[in-house]
Length: 436
Image (cartoon, rainbow, N blue to C red):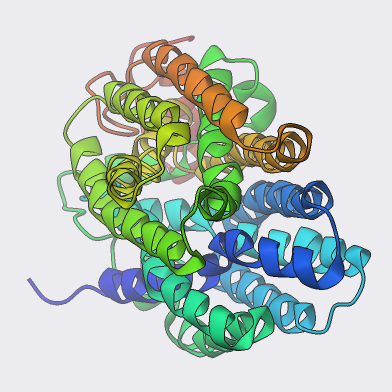
């Protein structure tokens, strides 16, 4: 089989995510030095991080909707440019409101537009086989960014300050714009190809599936949409919001150095590469609902133990267990969204489900800072995150089984939706009605 351009798109997207999303892991590094330099309290800084997580979440449906209309290349270029410009501007901030505007809005929207939502759309547009694996690979790119950048930035921060550390990632983000602009393509048809893995036996069915979607107003009237959004809310609360923002300050206050804490983040990221790739492979083969339940359960157990960790061995063990399922939730969530609601609306609907994720993240980021000020530690927040993880186990198991023609199960999609899509393509389609 000759080389398929889909793998060029995968490579470009992987590197773009690796660089652009690494900025999301930097709050834990810069909170303490910013607090020391400007005298801002932890709650005020955490509010800016929470605002950024919210706009990060809003960038998901905004970017997903724009991808559905204008294609991934333009949205990815715009998002990365916004990240690069915002990071450079951040180096000259002097007031707290500067931090709110630059980090809270510009970088938040940019990382949301150039994040997981756009990568999910790219995977489902370019691939018929290995969709879950490709989504997992893109999730692993985010972890790889932490592995590459965070330890180096920690060393630079200790030696030359937080501005020098941010300058590294600002420069890398600006450079990555070049290959994205040159090599990214929106659809296989743009280079005269069919999606990878599509064959003559399935081409007509796949064209129908590509045309099928569910309007947002219809999706929000289903229980599955809210189960997906609710479980992803918990995912955000227990990952980006709490661990991504407060793990390093928590570890430093438990007696670890900044470099050791950053090393734990790097280990967590490296294990997450393994976990996310494995999750993508498993999602192509097994029930994604059960995978989600297992991931949230193990995450809850690791968070419950975190307040008891005071030794390096315990921190390493936490990084291993937690790292294996941090972004592992993304492939099964994307698969279930595409299966239940159709590929044509994946960008928009997964974007809003992603926004729910970031609402949870914003809540945890701000609450972490507030309770740290009130109580002097993060212990209550970690216990609350563990409890929510167990709740997410129940939410995942209540979701409808996946449909094979839309995702990976064996139940055909509803006839009215297929007929509508087929009529637009001049095809005929049929199936059994599945009103739920």
